[in-house]
Length: 66
Image (tube, rainbow, N blue to C red; front, side, top):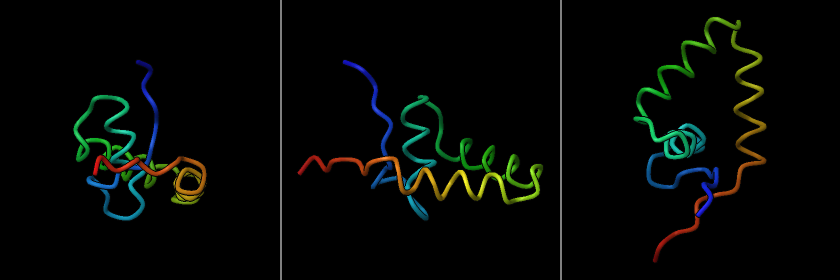
């Protein structure tokens, strides 16, 4: 079964993008968040903020397992 990138509903703080990316890459969600913050600060905020907003809009929400 192929992996699918989605926005996490369980591991979200703002939009679930980092949580879904962590699931997709099989990484710890806190490590992904720290890396995201570090890259955001190193790129003067704007490029990664724009990336996050675009990902928030484009990446589908995780289907619930109810």
